Image 1 (tube, rainbow, N blue to C red):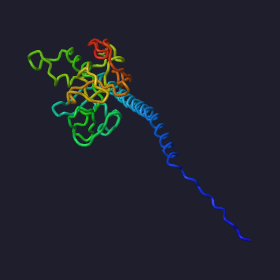
Image 2: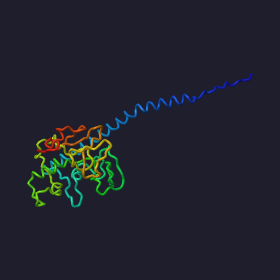
Image 3: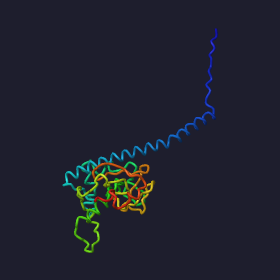
Image 4: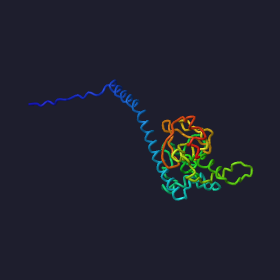
Length: 254
């Protein structure tokens, strides 16, 4: 008896069926991508808050071990070193390579800092700490306390000498509202010098400088911050008229 072999023909996808499948996948991606991007931004904000929490704890330990004094903005301006970051770094770890001092929302670049107006962290720059996007609240922690400290008039004309308030260390007990006065905040550089400035969502900070810095609401319209007491909070964009007032506890230590 002869055995016959039954052959089975496999039918493949038609071009139309493939196009339908591809269209469905593309549609699902289009629906999911905004949600995934939002989750990513939320995760970055959580990491940023965690970073600031550790910096806040470091600030508390520093104050406890340094006669109730906060660190200066820059302890050694002539050598361009000993910025506020370096004082907290010893309580956290390697201050140069530690990612705790960088908001995950900020881009990194190799080489030395280049003035483009965009906020970018340059970890290999000799003065890497200047390109950090966590800013020191100079008005409340340096300038105003220095003015009230009765420091000598170095210039001899009644004007403020920048070197003096750069190096000034404010006493913690001076702060009337330590849980409401901003110490370090998401910004466009290592120092917040313009309390009324608010960087746009794309991270551009005109004029193109790291020395003329603003708040940066980079976490879906919010910026994270540390208060003087070491606690973590956030501000919503845009600031209210009350928050922009010079006498608001955010900016005024009195």
